[in-house]
Length: 319
Image 1 (tube, rainbow, N blue to C red):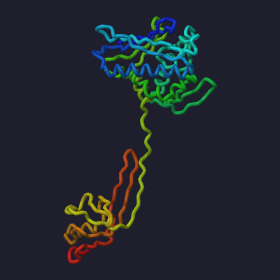
Image 2: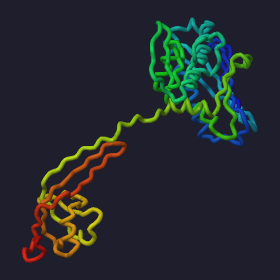
Image 3: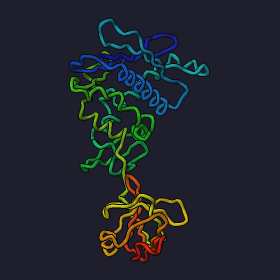
Image 4: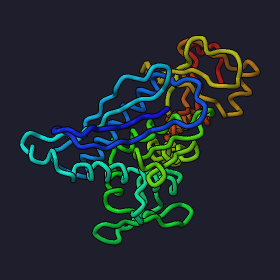
């Protein structure tokens, strides 16, 4: 599939052609995937142009009709100006600004540039994030990768890297390269394919995805424990096995507590039939509460000692 981002010469625009090509043998293209590519491509380029140039001009992208029987898209890219600065409409700097934007993003190669583009930076970082970033001058930063390599970038790429819109949407532009039938995605300026061509393959998309969706840095689970003495009332129906959890309410409340009982002496008496729970019974216990906060939060209860068993009917089940 080829995508041509083109702006025609006129009194209202300056011209620039960008080819976006999906290489390989894709049998078909999911319409929602294609929509994400177009939407993300337009959003990323426009946002990058706005951030880099900080003027009143903006990029307008339009999709022309698909060619019959193919996946070739022709996307017209226009540099449009605020009416207050109409004298700039024919200014050649507009084309230069648009070209610089594509080079900074890494959609096309800048043969003269000695620092990395955004895509070049992500390729070398691999996991989407640097170990550290150091400023080395008014227009230069050094990104330190996990393999101890140092990647120099200019202030423009540094700004793009930290832009949330670009961070969230860049991966959608290259997501089709993750399909097995696709060899990669190549972008280049029309008429200058050899000099400006940039190819992104599935391994590169992993790095871009790590940048767009970094792994959550989870804190180690934290466990808090507290042991108190409570009166508990056996919940109706909590009879039978001595293993697993038992259901109680905290006496005087409706608060339900499901707890393990680890008091071996009490469990022996219960197992031997010396103690049987009836509605209205009470237990004075040493209750341990364990609260674990991690990826998920949970609270566990354990009756470590039954201090006193108070049957509702004193003639039955006295400890």
